[in-house]
Image 1 (cartoon, one colour):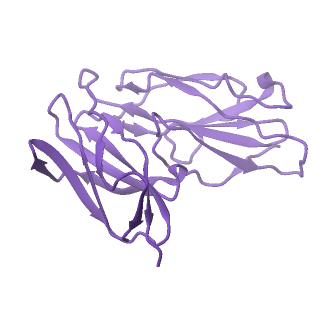
Image 2: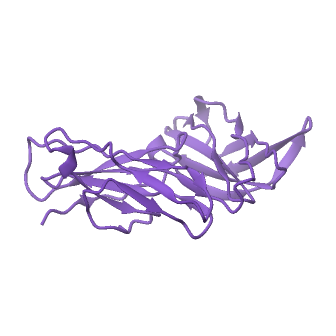
Image 3: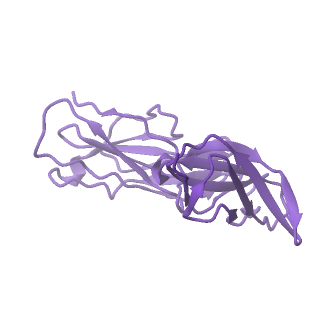
Length: 238
């Protein structure tokens, strides 16, 4: 029986325009000739409500040695680390989500030698499709690629919601775009500068002489979730 032994896959900012994450997993026997398959899938739509039937399509999975039709896939619909389906050669699936929220569905593909690859996407389930998402956050500080940062960093940005909803923000940080994880969630404090709301938070404890990446997500009362760009800074030497 072939198995896939994988390491943990961190949740990340997709999310670069619905960002995709990929990792490899081990196999039971030595294999120096077989290549790892490539995991890729789409989900339509990327935003819906509890009545939306999301269509998942992994038809584009591929492998250098195996016939693509023989590759097996399985799904983790919420990205919680528990596989919800068994391996199958079926490439498409439909799924509804009963609760509004942010989901990171995960797909894993396995070849005939037990090599695996996985891909993750982000989708948003809202409670009102007529409510428009917030604009992408506009970062004010620290500047992108800023050097010589202290271990305590002040992050600030602006953001507009055209429905005038209250907006909350999640700040993600990590050593790379792939390892971004939530550092602080539910940020809502702001000041008004020149008629514009400026949101700000201070985070301490960054290591010296390190590169860091950060990203802000904006979410409104309807459950919409809008990612900002991924920016980078470097802390000062010791």
